[in-house]
Length: 182
Image (tube, rainbow, N blue to C red; front, side, top):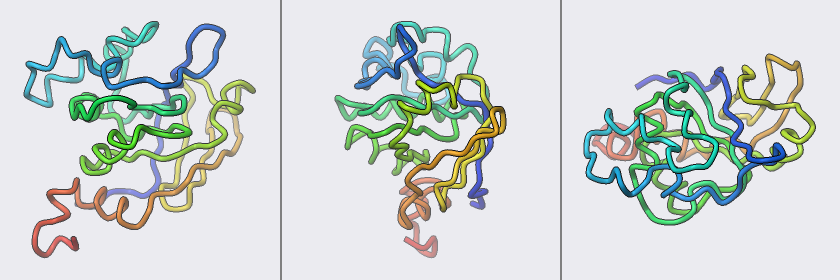
């Protein structure tokens, strides 16, 4: 599977009251346990962020190709795979945060969803340099980011070589197939 290494898209900056980034968003806030009976990934999208205060509208307004920017420790909590799959179902192309829950990060990488650390996101959001609705361009290999809306640059930790290879393959299972490079 061939994928571009530069992504462009509209961003969602997950902020709460006062405009501060929401931190410690756990997997139950991302995909509530009331929906765990849903087994088809394609049906999980409408429930994304449905248990996160102030963000119940997200799934209805998200578009294929959107990117999510969130506070530190995104995806804390359980190993709930649906918390990754719901974003894949919506066509979310990347999640950026200052840090991730370890299990969430691994699940996302294994599923082929790019997750990148953006250490200065709280400052960028506070200063109004990145806002929901902005259009951005991100180079997954160099970590260079640019707000096309505001004309400002930012930096993310780039994908590791293995993360990039898994993403290019379309996920860990595809990467591990004989002849796929894994």
